Image (cartoon, rainbow, N blue to C red; front, side, top):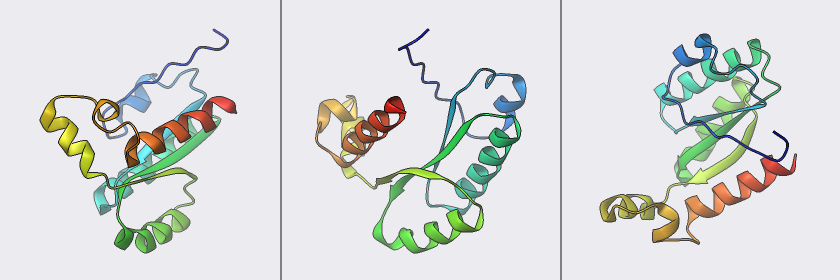
Length: 126
């Protein structure tokens, strides 16, 4: 399926990785929010993805505020996570949810939409 991409959004945790859902996966994006449990889970998922032989395992940090950057940088370094994208906190995401629309339809130039567009371009160019 050259030129085709499939993106799966799976629930947080490691259970799905042991069930064969990652068979033939080229890239695993592990989304981590700047909270201890989320970061610990992300580190476990990234490690398991590497152990399963997924060629490219990347971390996306999400909902990042200025005060989070120092502790995130330390955690990422200490756990050898390869951060491919940092998504800043974006109040427009909650607003889109309140309106019942996708973030891109609420604010096409917003923090989240811009970061995801950049991430997609980077991943699909590789």
